[in-house]
Length: 346
Image 1 (cartoon, rainbow, N blue to C red):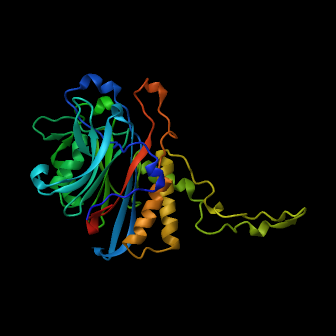
Image 2 (image 1 turned 90 degrees about the vertical axis):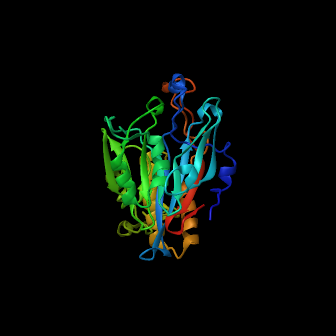
Image 3 (image 1 turned 90 degrees about the horizontal axis):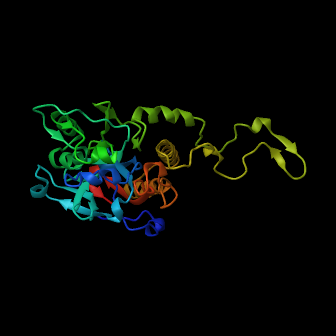
């Protein structure tokens, strides 16, 4: 079952759909320094009860895609890639990033799920530093990781084995674009890992927080969650013991007037650390208040979380220091909801 779903009315107000993904073009190196950049993307996993899942639990995975518009020629299409096209053991479904610029007409997947429920999402990580070339080894470009893993692998273990068997080396225009990636990989058992390349070495994380955004590296984000340990899932009454009656109709002070003060201090900007913290705490508080009962509940929560990190066009400006036309505004052209255990993508 495959379908596409809008994240809400705001999506219809966006400019034409465009996919942010790293691409490789060998014939146009001269324009590499002019390629716009993308530094966003958000990813979150939501557990819900399902007979299809391991031990009765499946995960709804939500991710947003953000990008700079390459020459005004970027778009995306959702495609089914059968085995005779993938060249591997498995077919897969993926939103393909498409560049229609002359001599750059190509499609690359930065997201997808294969027929056995293995799913992988590529997100930007400027800190990435890939492996060095090694004589006699099989080398692949970072932008080929998603397609190769979906075509060849059936589990997190086999995906990690595949990455051991190759060297991920910056090739083509990827370094010129300054577009580096890390990957979230999830299989039908519910196992979730993140793969990063830091200082030329492959680093594997068991992604127990089940959230991913962008820079800095993942362990930094985990520690940064401690910054917001003051947040509270309950109505703030902790200072009631200080209350006194104030005059002139003010009433008791201090007291919380209105709702939402339990989240005071949660960052609201679109930076990677802020998006990471919001997805982690908002998901946790929502699940603490109302348990998921089925796939439909997870779709509702997943859509709400993606809407919370949705970036409207124009609110995240380009960096002018990179030169005229090099950087472009970041925004969210589309979001994805997928359930590996049920092999569904929405």
